[in-house]
Length: 279
Length: 289
Image 1: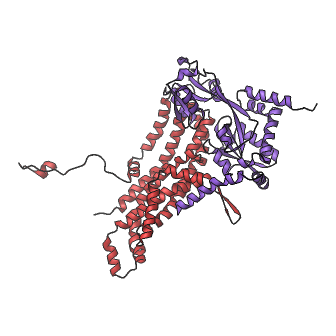
Image 2: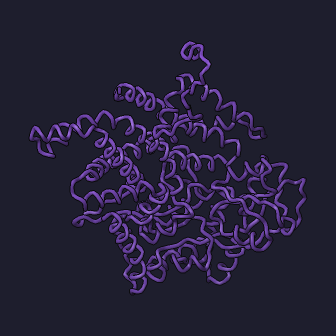
Image 3: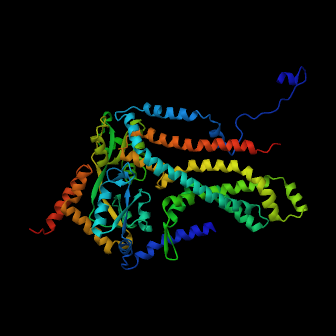
C-alpha cells in the first residue's frame, strides 16, 4: 500500500509540469502570487555574498536584494526559501517556490526543465586556486594530478574530460579548501569570482589564481517552465532589462563587495545604446 | 582460581572454549555510549578546542571560536532544536506504526502476516538516505484537503522519511518481544478460556512492554544521530546551518573543527543521558534465568 501511494505520488508530480507546459498561458503562478500577496523566492544560503545567513538566521546577499526589489515592484510580501543546487529546479517545478535566483549557470539542459528568462544578470568562469610554489601557468599543467572541487558543479566533468585531471569533489567549500591546504590536491577548481575574493582577503597569501579563466558562462534566474512566455516570464525579462539599464546590478555588485565584472559593464552599455533615453 | 578448580591431576583438562572479541550486540551503540564515564564529556569539551588549535593558519583558531560564539544561538535554537524535533516526531510515528506492524507480524491470518513481514523487511533493509530522498522529492510540498491548503515543510517530510525505517525496526522489536514470552503462557491462557485478544492484551503485552523499552531507546539514540542525514537534502538542521554559517564566515578551513565539534558536543550531551538510562533500565528489566 505504501509503495502504491509512493508510486502514485511520484507519477502525479512528475507528470504535472508536462501537462501544464502544453497548455496556453494560464498564468497560475502570477495569479497565485497576487491572490496570496506573497512572492516566494528560492535563493542560496551557502554562497557568500550572493546569498548567505546573517547571524540571526535571516538570508542576506545580492540575490535576496534582487528578490526584495521584485516583490516591491509587484507590491507583495517577500518570502525567501533556502535552496541548494540539487533541489532548486525541483522546488520551482513543484511550485514550492515561484521564482529561483540561486547562482544557477545558464545551460541548455536546464533551459529544458525550467523557464530561464534573460537577460542574464552575472557571469563567472572556471579557474583554480593553487599554491604559488607549484608555479602552474596553463591548464595542461594539471593533467594527471588530483584537483579538489565541489560536488554538483558542472565544470568538474568539463575539466576532467578536457585536461584529464582527477577531480576530488567535496560537499562544502571549507572542506575543499582544507584539503587543498593539507596537500591532498594540487589545486582547487571553483568560480573565478569567489577565488578572487578569497585571495584578496589576505588569508591565502601563498596561493594564486594562475590560469586563464575558462567557460565564462552567464547566470540566470528562472520562473516555472509554464510561465516562461507568459506574464511572469515577460515581467522578469523586463525587471532584468531595467536593472541593466539603470545600473542597479552594478550598484549591487559594489554593495556586496563582488569584483566588478566586464560582463555587467558591457551589458549596461549595450542596453543603454539600444534604448532611447528621454532627455 | 583455575589451578584450585582443576587441582592436581595428570589427566588433560578441557577448558571452556571462549571466543575472542566482542559478541554481536544489537544495542552496541547505547551500550558503548552508556559505558563511558560521565567525565568523558569534560574530556570531549577539553579536547575539542585542542584539536582545533592543532590546525595552524593565519586566520587563527581564536578567531574561529569567536565566530562560533556568534552563531551558537542560531545553531542551537534553529538548528539542533529541529534535530530533536525531527527525532521525537519520527520516533512517535515510527513507534505507533511499528507497534501495529509488529502485532500484525504475529497475526494468525497468513495474508496479514505476509504483508506486514514484507513491509517490515522492505523498510528495515532500505538505505535511510534513499528513503529520505524518495519522501523529500516525491511527496508534495502542500496538500489540499477540502479546499484547505496544508503546507508540508521540508522537516516534516524528513520526519516521515526517517519514521519509515524506525517503524520497521520497532516492528521487529515488538514481534521479537511477543515471541520471547514462553509459549506455555499462551497455552495456560487458552486453558483458562481467555480469548486470543485477551491473552495478547492482558497477559503477553504487559510482559513485553518492559523488555521493549531498552531496544526502543537504543533506536531512539540511533535515530537522533541519523538526523544530520537530512542536511544532504537541504533540510534546516544543525549540520546544514553549520555549513551555511561557515560560508557566511568566509569558509576558513579553521572553522571546520569548532563548528563540527560543537555539533558533536551537542549530540553527545543529548544522547549520553539517554544511553545511561537505557543501560540502567535494561539491567533492571533483564530476565534472570
